[in-house]
Length: 471
Image (cartoon, rainbow, N blue to C red):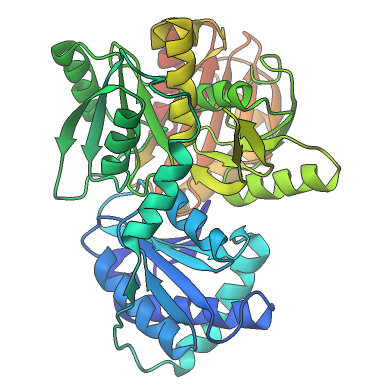
């Protein structure tokens, strides 16, 4: 099977996940919950899914397996992952989200949630070990049905988000919602309309479209720029397939970097401790009045960092990833509302934070972004890049300084390196290039920082070409 745990959940080819594999991993998760004392037989367990063609059948197979394992499944329908997690935490219940997030439509995955939030790396290891045992004995793959609480799940999340800003906080803004196939598409319209924005629905699709908010495709960029011009929009909002990573474009259709969105939201919340991966912009430390902790890429690592901060006695703890997904570990008071912790990626809070600041300052999003004066960052990925080739490249670069220097000779001289996650290289001209294999897909990512946009784009193209031509 192609299945493996990556930066956030189990991922693999849809044809591998449909049928026995989904039943195996759902059963393994149930056994782990009981063995670890995280849930008891008869407990509720929530199931959500995205709009991929394979997601309904995978969800039904999981519901059947969880029922036979002694749990009481609840069907939450097609809802954003943070909405599912919020509902599950309100019930002190575990959950599964059937989603491949931003990866291509022929792939899918499962995200697992304990009653207190996302599973961690230790949970992943335990579930994988249980799966090996279950696979040998599982024979019943009968799909199941469950009580439908999709409306309740959506309403809980809607109520949380309409409490964050003052009434009519976005009045006067004309905001496009790129709906494509994200499960967040209708809630975005409802929440933004509640705050008085003039909302224009755009690009709704009944077939699944993979949208990566960290490496926005040329096709998506063209759509955003066209809509921004034709509709005279102040902003365009969207998210990835399961609605946990924000996409926010300015009045020109240019997306704001996810780490900038996270930085702005840290100020909006009044955060005192911020946890973010090494791939987030290097200018973050100097841009806010908070402590910064750097981690490997992936929400489990960010959550572990937030938990460490809490254990060290810090308060007002939050985290974000370079893709813009925002997590909270502390309770924050916003607009008189007590915002409970939600330690899983959320696209709604960061989008509302940035839009409200722009409205308050009466600035365009492009002007607001410029005030932060971060190094110019860019990122992209090579798809269908075999994981074996990624591993060979990283082994070659790590083998010796001469290998690394030779590989990068056409882009600059090496000043220093960081090996927290992938290989991040500071060059003597002040720019940075970072190579990182995807944790759950045949993709190789490249991240760069430079003094200006032209230099960043040039460095990114050179970096991708170096990867492409390796070997």
